[in-house]
Length: 201
Image (cartoon, rainbow, N blue to C red):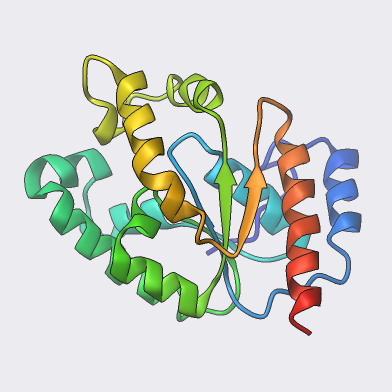
């Protein structure tokens, strides 16, 4: 678990400094877990959010691959989605035992009822919500998405949105991410997190 540097996360120095100013006074008492579909920006936005809040950043998928000694596509291919979800839940439970950090989770993590209950109990959850066109533009840059290995990835993504968006809506905070700089989503997340924490004082 590392604290990202500004150069790591690709921010201009002034933009990163702006985010740090926006984050002043925000001190999450527990881990902030980002949920949402693949392509929503959980890892990219998560790194910037961690930098702004001076918290460590952890990517659950990276931790799962390290624990299994296999890539996620390999786990899916060799063991199936059910076994992957079991391992994912065990890793997320272990991560939530750590001090507060920013946690990017896989697209299906919050959909699993047991993992969702765990995250609701022990984390502050933020749903990064994005429209279909934005998601497709982002996932087109990578070919390691097991659930999109079909002839019509757009149709698959639409089905995932239809099934999962009502469940993602159970998150503590919802942040709309559109086709704009990630810094805008980070700023929105910080504002929403501040409001959430103030309401619970």
